[in-house]
Length: 179
Image: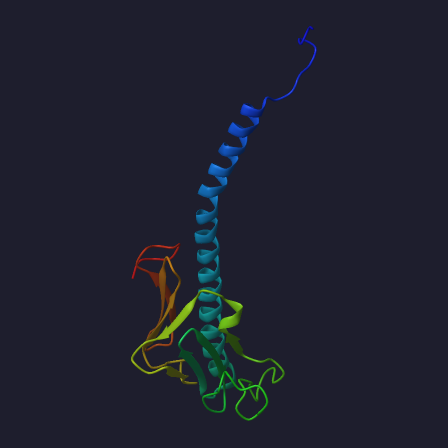
């Protein structure tokens, strides 16, 4: 019989193609995991820096002290701010302890939870699990402190200067200036 009219793959060609596809997938999965971790770290960093800047701007705009609080325990953390006194970012029912302001938009809940950024850890500067920063209405000054956000592959620091300015840096680059 004449086999020249039939086209297709042999079993050996199909097995080689499948082996190459599995090899490429095996190489791509760890790189994709690192990419996702870096994206989560960047999102958490930008959110923390933005909320610190919002708290400082609130103090300047409404001419009253604004308190930013970050709490970290084991793998769970949260941060938030308000203008009355340090808030409890874990509070859900007690309106008095929630991270809401009296001025501006009192309906906005000014807090962020670790569940929004899986595999990212927050470490307040110092040994305490909770850290508060008070932004003064006088030029937005604050107590100098820093926070660290960590993922499996990188660490990013957010530094608050005595003048209340918020700066982000990273030892490994990660798209931020070096510390």
